[in-house]
Image (cartoon, rainbow, N blue to C red; front, side, top):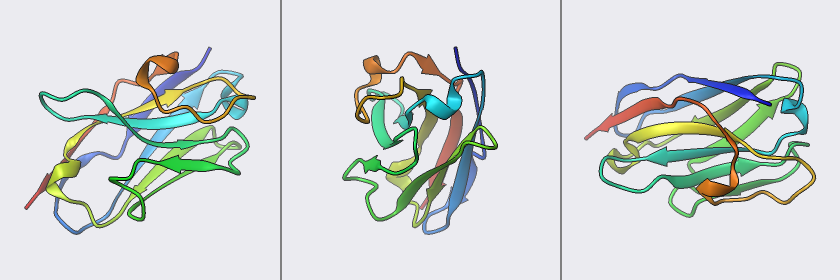
Amino acid sequence: QVQLVESGGGLVQAGVSLRLSCAASGRTFSRSNMGWFRQAPGKEREFVAGILWTGTSTVYADSVKGRFTISRDNAKNTVYLQMNSLKPEDTAVYYCAADRANIPIRTMTYEYPYWGQGTQVTVSS
């Protein structure tokens, strides 16, 4: 079982950076693949980035590739999403999710069993 709490969201102007954090509790965090998803108003929740439990592999959505970076610190039970060059279309509620270990990074919402409550990111033009 993994419990997740996101933080770091806010209202920012286009072009700036923001870093989201996801604090996890539970014994299995260090063995869990982790993902960041987002949901904009009126849209489906979508995959943003994922990281292997070892931290040695990452996957990104095309829309954020080159701008966002996912990382993790297993000693701190925390996963991060560094977001640079933010655009108004990045506005959404951002969710942290935990998957199982020993499998490839997955990108579908329904595949992740554990979710945080989300943090709002609003990017103004």
